[in-house]
Amino acid sequence: MSDNPYDVLGVKSSASADEIKKAYRKIAKESHPDLHPGDAAAEARFKAAAAAFDLLKDAEQKARFDRGEIDASGQERPRQRSYYRDFAEEPGNPYRQRPPYEGFGDEEDIFAEFLRQQQGRQRGDGFGGRSFDARGADAHYALEVPFIEAATGGSMRITLPGGSDLEVRIPKGVSDGQTLRLKGKGGPGQGGGAGGDAYVTLSVGAHPVFSRVDDDIEMTLPITIDEAVLGAKVEVPTIDGPVKVTIPKGATTGQTLRLRGRGIVAKGRAAGDQRIALKIVMPKTVDDDLARFMEEWRKTHGYDPRKGVTA
Amino acid sequence: MSEATVFLTEEETLAAVGRLDRALLTRFLRIEVIRPADSGGHMVYRRVDIARLELLCDLCDDFDLNDDALGIVMGLVDQLHGTRSDLVALMRALGEESDEVRARVTKRIGR
Image (cartoon, rainbow over all chains, first blue to last red; front, top):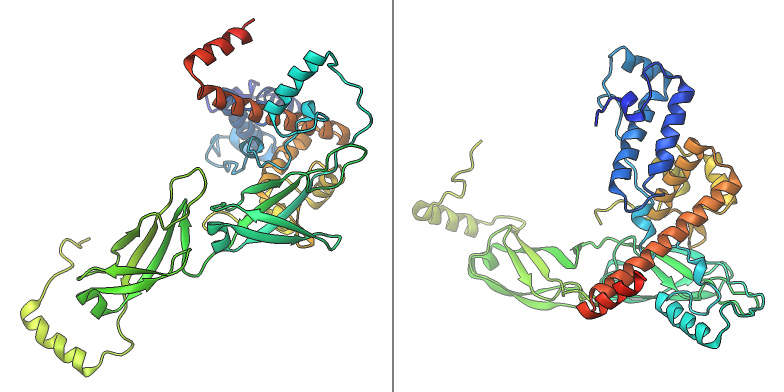
């Protein structure tokens, strides 16, 4: 497809601002990715049209393009944006709605719905004479979770506007930005209606020592020069408490030790590892003994770690 | 964490969504198409809110939808995505069934 914005929108270069807007609206209506999820061609069409419209809707920019001062992509900044669609189908999407199943009891489960329909058909009361039930309103909370609790799971409390508490069970290995849904913990329902749900979006805090890559925990472990030369057994923190780790003889900075299965062990996923990057740290002061030893040592044991380190 | 901040303040939200101004955000909150999360008494915006605000700006800027229309469209969009998500769950469950079960379901759907 041509990247000429007029071609993209299907208008003549003499088109008025109104015609351009109309053409863009038509394409947006037919292909906005949030309104047509799962249609890649529509998405490409929309993005091209949005870029073209961005360029042409501004009279000054349009004039510059017409004069050839800027090209179709050169001057216009690509739109860095997120699409609702990418969040909308997540099970934790707090805006998720499923009205067609409401009032049947368990609004969560499409399979429960399936069974209820079967039952209804057998009893012959497809619609049922329901009295007025209104489901409670959903509540939305944001919760900062410390790194360790997010990794190993735990329990936290949210203080509600009314002063009461809401207990939130944090499953092992929750990730930053994940939303938990607490069924029935939102506003109370009316009549026989169920309570609304509470949606709790989590922000996972940083840790001074650990960082997380998926289910692996990474850390840097400082070691002394004697530990590096002679090897050692040292205590290393993990998310589940300290463990003894063997530093191999001749360890070097940047070398990584792996503690299998000591990362995040989340339900339904393979256990992560803890990766320990070693870092040799010099003593605070180089004393005479050390200096003297090194002077002697290098006379007969010189080595070149910079072989191949060239520009 | 290396990812973008999970929770944005109102100011940060206004900065993050280029086309959004305070008046428009106030309007979205009033008609309840955006419901920020309560973080210990103050309101914060999540990634899903940012993405949703982009869509709302599209709907307002590009289509001049009024409050009622905006509420209806967003309700339908949320129903559509909820239904798709259920459908995906169902297809995944079916995918794990035996060939025989899948063949039988396929036959029934095509009635």
